[in-house]
Image (cartoon, rainbow, N blue to C red):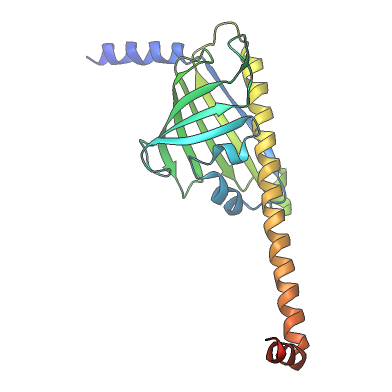
Length: 203
């Protein structure tokens, strides 16, 4: 029994012989801020520049078992002009304390067989010294026919670089809105009786 289990584990390890990790620094976002945006399993299209659509098929976005459908930006998928890459993916783990989510790619049109990935946010790396964070994307999968492992890693690197950029842009926008609102409130407070008079005669 133990020998059979060991053999099965060995076969699985051989099948998933492609493993790797790509990272991107986000110096303008704390780990908690970045995780608050990336933790929604159904909001992938908001942060990944290569994903045009992401919708729920079933389940809750922060609960294991949730299934999402993702569709890429139309281009040339499968050699067909104007077609888009697509995949159904299942959330396996959602670790809020560890700021990580793990998922599996299911049916897709990109040639992937078994594919697991973990997207996480860490208060580590060079960005942490400035109060920022690091986004990490790890993968383990079967080799993909017609694609080099380096090409897959490069594709994921482009994706996580884009996510880091979008997360920081979103946070900068929110901070700008907050600063503008604070300035308006301060101006209103300082205007005192003038505002009261203006309100009283505005009929």
